[in-house]
Amino acid sequence: MTERPSFAGVAESLRTATNLLTAISDTPRLDAELLMAHALGVDRQDVLLDPARFVVPELYTHLVARRMAHEPMAYILGYRDFWTLRIEVGPGALIPRPDSETLVEACLDLAREHGAGWPSRVLDLGTGPGTLLLAVLSELPAATGLGVDASEFALAYARDNAAASGMAERTTFRSGDWGNGVDGPFDLILCNPPYIADAEPLMPDVADHEPREALFAGADGLDDYRRIIPDLPRLLAPGGAAVLEIGARQRAAVTALAEAAGFAVACRRDLGGRDRALILTRK
Image 1 (cartoon, rainbow, N blue to C red):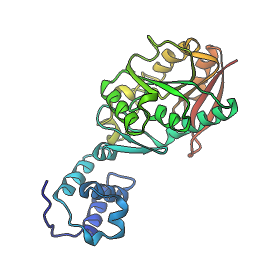
Image 2 (cartoon, one colour):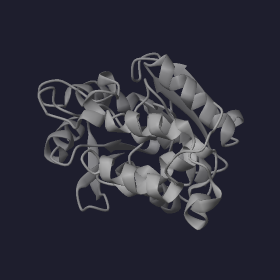
Image 3 (tube, rainbow, N blue to C red):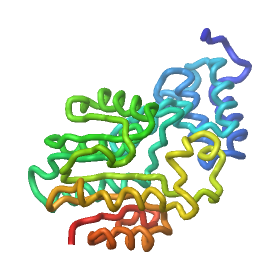
């Protein structure tokens, strides 16, 4: 699209966009700056350092309008930064959340406890755009991984992300229904399943845009745990561990399911102090 001068400069346009986005975003100024940088094809830091050097492109108004309609920033920008990676993402794929980095931290602690060479094989059930698998493998260069997801849209993003991060040779992605048809054993299993109850209200950014099948899991939000956990003993290698993301109020219920399947369970909290990851090991 050809750029042409606007009646407003970059600084004024950022102020206007921030005021508009205040009604729908917790981070209106940041959103405005990221959208401007995206429209200009430059880094956000470039906009902040010298806004006067740029002419506001027509595209900016369109991007702000998309955000005003509650479209997630990650879908507009085409990526979300997670751990040390830039994860390409778009419609049909769950957007990475900072809270999920709790699972990565738990995996790295497990790796330190086990020592060099562990894990060798990693399985990510419900891999989405490859978020957890690639973050963990980025810190464990000797490991390889398999990502499974029911969405071909998500798997396309996962393969692109593996290639962009230099891990295509160490990863395989395949379509599947959780662990069905997957052959173990794996030293480490990751899983961020849907865990929102069907009747639970969500913000429009999430409810109107992200894939429902990656969010909702029955009346109590536990349907997928009931399918995944009983299959984990078959997939885990001796001495292995599974790390599952949970909702903030699901620790007791998911722990009971895991213990019934023969696991010892530990819990990790996220930076907000909420229960976020369960670590399952053989008793």
